[in-house]
Amino acid sequence: MGLSTVCPYLYRDREGKFVCEALGTRVDPGLMPCLINYTSCPHYQQRALTQARPPEPAVAPSVVEAAVQPVEVKEPPPAERGVEELEEEVVRALDSVEKFALELNERWSLYEEGAKRLEKMWGDASTRCGYALKALDDVVGFYEKMVESMKKLLESGRITKEVYEELSSEARSTLEEYRRRREGLEDRLRSVERLVLPHIQRLKAAGARSEISKLRLGLMKLEQLFKEGKVSQEVYERMRRELEERIKQLSYAAGEGS
Image (cartoon, one colour):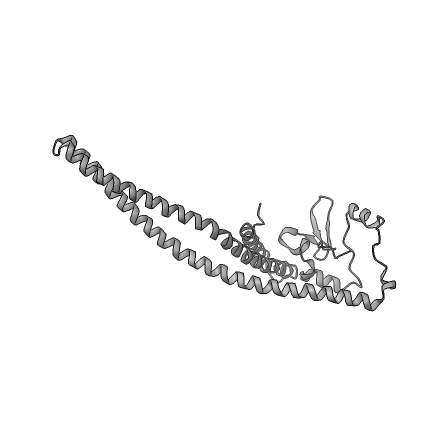
């Protein structure tokens, strides 16, 4: 059975609140690595050093029941296959995992660089597109006013209906042409945007998760400093609120917020 992701020092008190046995105080597991990677927690590490062996994490009944169910053995036990053969299989499996992990690291690095380049390209292109749309709006507005002015000239009798029809027809045709061009450019912008945004959001989410991990470690260090009496109650409360608020904001950017 693999290691549990739940810290063995985390439990609920009579009121149903989460308590850290290592700290001796109530904690919020969502803001600390109690449910993610508790072995990186300095409080867990310090407490584990004082014990010959840390307590095993609680296992849900369904997991225990599943563990004792009879399992069909499809391969001979390790003793029959030989220790060397088993060791060779494990080493090959680990080599495959390591190779694939390194390949993913390289691919992610290339993807991250590409996503950053794409974000810059999109920023430049969308800004220029904004200028072009504004210029087209100005042209459309100009011809709309021209058509309206011709209509007023006709109504005032300053031009004949024949002249109005000839001039306004050309103006309306040009107006519709620029409207189509503006609409086409805006549609093109939205089409490209739908392709670009997922990459930008994925890039920002990765950055947010990295910062969240650092902030959670900072929160744990703050808890330890307060417990040791190295920071005042006022400073502790203020810094804790700031860290928790920042973690909450980044959680939404990382896609972890509700």
